[in-house]
Length: 126
Image 1: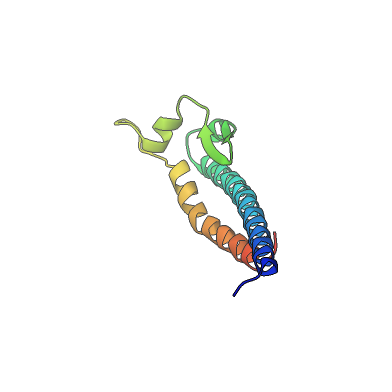
Image 2: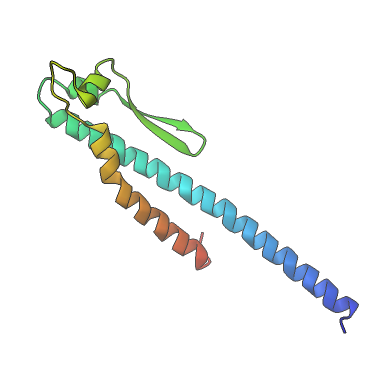
């Protein structure tokens, strides 16, 4: 048999749990956004270094790398008309990929960043 005080206690427990879960969700979104931003910076940096080492005067292209933000998402772009031709090549010029290798190199560190942050949140950190 439950009493009115048992019902109030359960309601309070549910409210505290709901508040904690809401806090965890907000913290997880914030942590994910930070991990995405750091990974975008890593991708852009890797691409710049790759372009500066490439033949054919590509340092100019390296200086045109940008990170665009759309909410928590980030897009790394090369704002240069020749970027697509450098990345994929043409029938006259071999490809010198710089963005795809940079994204590939960032994939594992991004996963590790996310897992570290999720573990910290689950342990009660923020």
